[in-house]
Length: 269
Length: 297
Image 1 (tube, each protein chain N blue to C red):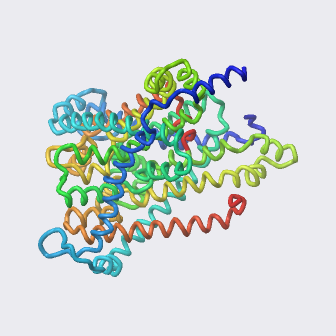
Image 2: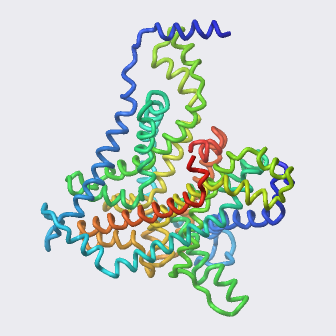
Image 3: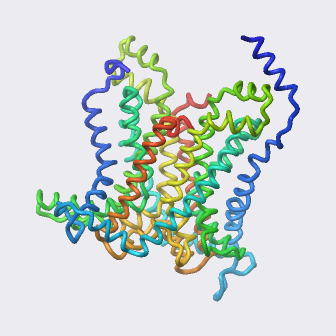
């Protein structure tokens, strides 16, 4: 839009640049701190090196919790992608009267504070004897908060979907499963993959629910990092954190390629 | 090609329905939500009404004593007040910072908007612990902020462990949420409206104040609500940046449950906290509805 119409000037550009520096700066600091060659977290960094990455990779609890988080996030991604895609297909196409109720119900885990959900789940698991040992409790808790993202991204692509293509396939003799596999899925796959990536990162970075549901020997990476930070403060923590920063950048780039970030940011609302 | 389409549609209608009933698509999700979301919350309500014995977790006997204890202890109210005050301040500051960003984003050219969105969304995907840690590096004793202040003024400025550090960290976490909510509303304003206001002689500022701002209020409402509810229940940022000096409700509840092992009292505190948050939100919505009568239609 024309600058004269909206009346945006240089002051706006200056303010906005400042805000972006405020948003991105701390992440850059973490990455810089991880590359620091010195013995302490201090500024300015004393030369560049990868020694803290090597130190982190040799720290057994970090490696163990990293692998555990990866495995957990992978299972959560599979479950929430399957459930979330199916739920979106139903809500967008087959629900009429209950559409809003169903949407509210599916998004409810995002609306209620995750820490309360974690508490409710902890009491429930302990009271019913299901317990929080192993990965089960974490898997369920993470799926609750990851599934809504898949639901949102798939709903967004389904809303602009031309159904006459499916009708053509059906009238040419394709069964419902063939139609889904050959027509529907390829057309909505951008939304499905974006949703899956969001589900993955939601689980991988999840903190409040994990805090309550982790058990001895089954710590996730954010919880391990949190425990570490309470007692020590060195560049190894920054090296571990850099993994989270890099993952976020990669996922943003992929989603932008697939469906465009606009679709997941406000197209979904 | 209306006739071809008609034939295709007729063909579909004539085809026998071989598929499974569609409700099977939603059934697993609803089952998950019912068993592992609804039931645990209902169970928590029940737990808040049970007796806490001296030994053991709870006894299946109903009482209101937990609520009395949660509500009558002035210490709880001090923590509650601090929590709401910090969240309110965070929400106001976030709005102030995020509005220009949303405005700039909405009227940016297409290509640039892509990059701006990336800058806005990537911090959202970084773990909260990592974002807290980043501010620990910046605001700590050997952090950049203290070094800069010391060099300039000679005084020390260690913010870690103060409410200020918590608010800075929370604002940093919630600016993208707020900016995206407001940008969503700004996207829906037809550019013709602004153009019309300008061509009728309104200054850019008047056009903003009388056209853009009122029409963006639904986005402001959505953003402030989201940020307030998230900020009130935040746990990681207050504990990392407050360095356990500043107690907020989520920390108190988790301590009651995990350290004091008092499930009934912890559940009652959760309910009181939840109820108060809902009351504040309802009050806020009421005030806002009075402030923008045009959204009621």
